[in-house]
Length: 223
Image 1 (spheres, rainbow, N blue to C red):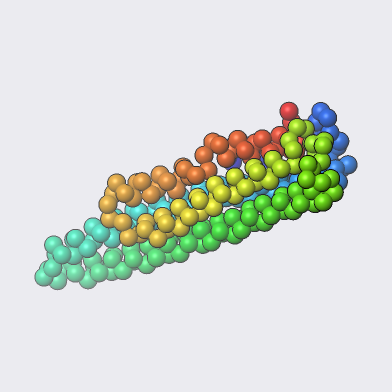
Image 2: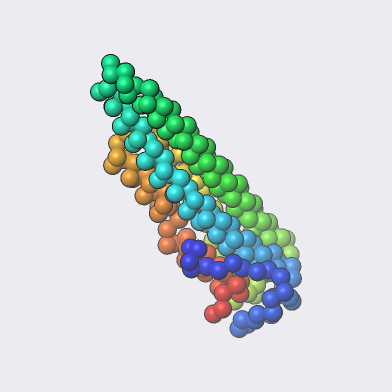
């Protein structure tokens, strides 16, 4: 997503799109929905940067784990040979220390992702609050004219809910990978974990299209 989406600015833009007012004139529910769309964009940018950082750390954890396993095998083979026992022990200690450090770094990345998903949940609540407000103002049928181009207000809440569910599932997967990665000695399984972390199966092209549609509808993307 980083290569596709550019940062969205909220202040001072006078860009207009067909059928809607300039950004500075947007008020009320439209203002809140537009701000929420920008928040979605920026949160996902942060998520993707963290995903790239975490992928680098995960690869290092796998490599360190393989080194640790190899050193254990070597220690068994060299048992009784005092000349290399001390050196092997030092290498094993250093490898274990570095492995622990990388695991702590990856945990920090997952913690930051958790906070991002919490903010996404608040955006969903915000969109549902806007629907409740419009139901109070206009009745059960809601407003008759769209806030921006064509979407009814309920569609913003629907898109937000789908995006939130996708990233919540992805976060659950990240946590599972974090728990298993350093303890896996099977190279094939380790490659599966690394691939799942990098390519994010729950935030696929459908999620990207949802975000792009949201940005187009609210005027953050030119039509």
